[in-house]
Every structure is written in structure tokens, then in C-alpha cells.
Image 1 (cartoon, rainbow, N blue to C red):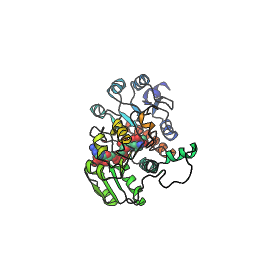
Image 2 (image 1 turned 60 degrees about the horizontal axis):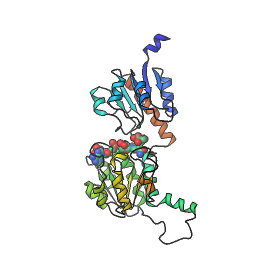
Image 3 (image 1 turned 60 degrees about the vertical axis):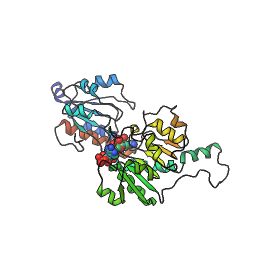
Image 4 (image 1 turned 45 degrees about the vertical axis):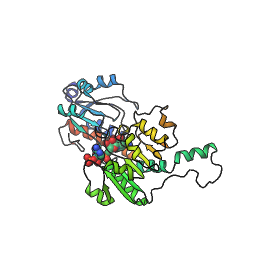
Length: 330
Ligand code: NDP
Ligand code: DGY
């Protein structure tokens, strides 16, 4: 028995993961698993100790896998599999230098995230949380012509920052609401998706100035960090709604607060913030025209289970030196 265990590859899993992925890992029988078996994030010291000497690491977007963690892992580490499509928490340059392969979970969460983005947009633009509260606290006294009015999608211009998998899926879902015009930015024009949406590839300035709804779905990279700042919000219309389901750091939150308080934009809906969780005394939480969700874009039971299984299969394939179902090209 001891000799069999010695041949097993060692993996570290930084959290309790949804059952589908857990089953894939345990039934594979090719690795010995050490796991932070909790719903809560792993403390840094436990991560550094747990990863030492491992061949594989399965992590979450809330685990910062930096040089320190990679050094602690040591030279055996061959594969990192993240339970996310975003990989801004991984020190990609260091990982690449060390020849470590990376698995991630694109496509399978696109529908859930696009759906949630549409829900957040409607909740923000039609003031749903505020309205629900008014019903509960007695603020609903009678039907009033302009009370709880918001902004509709019909006839509007929607600007999408980052027309990738999720950006496109949001566009397809919004089109039947009667959106008149789609604008988008990306690093390169997306001809096929743009043709289907009749979307125009524009500068970020034009997108800010002309959109009634701005939706951020780009990845977090150095060029997009803090991209939605004071200058950006000042270019937006006073009646426009800003939605972010990408990463919190794309937005300068102090500038967003000013824009919301000063009426430079109408409202904002955020599924992602800096930091996460957002402290309950953050000024944005005091604003009626700001709707904040706790990073639930991909949070359907089935999506999270499929993500979990894919992350486990990526890890196993990487350990076995095989093609991963979803490998990030470094
Ligand atoms: P994609 O890679 O398909 O899309 C990312 C898009 O960002 C691409 O179109 C890319 O453009 C664009 N982009 C990159 N840099 C810039 C830039 N400088 N300016 C404008 N656009 C830029 O990824 P997905 O659509 O699958 O996911 C997008 C992001 O959404 C993830 O990285 C993650 O952070 C976030 N996410 C959030 C979730 C949530 O729960 N809220 C759930 C899932 C994802 P190009 O193609 O031209 O390079
Ligand atoms: C991701 O996958 O990057 C999301 O933020 C969570 O699903």
C-alpha cells in the first residue's frame, strides 16, 4: 500500500469544491489529495504549507497564486487548475517561466453570467431593490406618475466593453429587448459577433459618450485596470447606467462614487468589487442608485458543478501530461 501511495501524484485543493469535481478527483485514483475542506478561504500560511511539494494545485479566484506561493510549492508543481474563467489572480509570467500548465473554465459559465448581467442591469435601471424596500417600509403610499421611474432598454444604445464570450452572450440576450444600437470595444474587432448584433467597434470615449447602458465584460489586465475612472464617467450621459460583471479593479470605485453622488451618471450595478467582500461601511453601499451583488455571475448549481468537474479534469489531464479539456494558452 505504501509503495502505491508513493507513486500517486500529490495535489492540493484550496477549498471544498462542488460535488461533481470532488467525485472526479476522488474516483480517478491517480492522486493523493490534500484539501482545505471548508467553505471559507484558506489562510495564507495554510496555503503556503499545503502547496509544498505538490504536483498539482486546484485553486479558486480568491486565492492569489503569486511568486511566494509558487516558491513554496517548489519544482514539482506541474499544473494549476483554477475554478474560474478569470485568471488575474495567477502570476502568469512566473507560472510561464516555471513551465507550469494552467487549466481554467471558459464557455461553460457564459450563459449563467450573461443571464445574471441582464438581471443586474434590469434591477439597476428599473430600481428593483429600492422599490422592494419601499413596499416593505411603507414608502408605497399611492401610484404616482414619476415615482420609482428608471430607464428602459427599448430604443437604447448599449455599449459593451470587451466583446468576448460573455459580452457577446449579453448582447444576444439584450437584442430582443429592442436595443436600437450596440457599440463595443475590444483589443481587436470581433467581426462575426459584431455582424450578428450589428455592433460598431468604437473608441472607449465614443462608447462612454453615446451609450445609455455601459456594460463591462473585459478581462482584468494591466490595460483595463482602473479604466473606468473619473474621465470615463464624466464622458457618460447623466441618464446612463453603468454595469460591471468583469472584475472590480477595472473600476476606480472612488470615482464611481463621485459620479453617482454628483449625478454624472444615473446608476450603477456591480457584481464585482474591490475588495471582495466589500466592507459593509463602503460608501457605495449607502447609495440608492448603486446595486451591488456578491460576485454571483456564474452561481447556478449546474454551472458551478460543471465548473468543478472541468477544473478537476483539467488538473488530472495536466498531471497525466495529456491535453486538458480547457487549457489556457500561455
Ligand atoms: P473573454 O476572454 O472571452 O473576453 C474578454 C474580453 O476582454 C475579450 O473580448 C478581450 O478583447 C477584452 N479585452 C481585453 N483587454 C481589453 C482592453 N484593453 N480593452 C477592451 N477589451 C479588452 O472572456 P469571458 O468573456 O469568458 O470572461 C470575461 C471576464 O469576465 C473574465 O475574465 C472574468 O474576469 C469575468 N467573469 C466574471 C464572472 C462573474 O461572476 N461576475 C463570471 C465569469 C467571468 P480581445 O478578444 O480583443 O482580446
Ligand atoms: C470567473 O469564473 O472568473 C468568475 O468570476 C466566477 O465564476
